[in-house]
Amino acid sequence: MISLPSHAQTHWPEPPVTVELWGPLACFTRPELKVERVSYPVMTPSAAVGALSAIFWKPEMQYVIQSIEVLTPIDWINVRRNEVKSVITAPRIKALRADHRERYDVEQDRDQRNTVALRDVAYRVNTQIIPTRSAKAPAAKYREQLRRRTERGGCFSQPFLGCREFSAGFGPRGSWPGSPTDTKAGPIERTEELGVMLHSIRYGDRGQETYHWFRARLDNGVLHVPRRPLGDDEVHMPAGSWRTGA
Image (cartoon, rainbow, N blue to C red; front, side, top):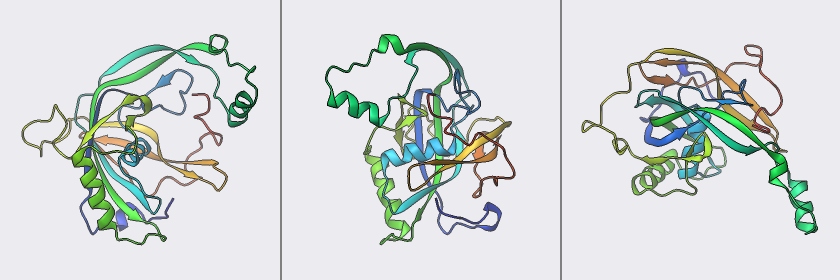
């Protein structure tokens, strides 16, 4: 994770690269409600980074989300599914491979969970691309590569909307199938305080996760993402991995 100056003090030399994402279902789980999943009303910046990275990613670059525009009315749906209760670990996989007599019985590890998800969603993600210190090419090269892959529908893996089973379609501005003829049409008219939202995740040398947060607000259908997240003394959230077992 790159240390960046605050939003108020920064002026980007280039306009953002815009990618539209859409799908029939989405769930951007609130961390305080992980057992029975409840989605945020809009896509989170970390979910947007994940979707963009599925389209195009290089280790010498980083996405910095500027804003996320909500293009469809916020509509909820309840989904009850059979899920496994535990998360399989690397040692468990190794044990199963080493001894073919070992079995994993999904019937004994099954549980029903309810998910409050979003349906028929579409977002317009505006992002900057920042090269790291190890980059050997300017940001313009990575910007053009993202644009080309978005226009032709190329991706490393299928982008998804919060949960891997909620696949996303993607394309450049105006490519969303429900988009009006005027590609400059704005987002929905909705203003709402969204509370504390996940800003980004920092990974340590051993894969440990550190979460960073910000106070989110939907302003006339647009979620503006600050450059700097809240400091550790400004928000008190669980220190462990809240995604484990979720």
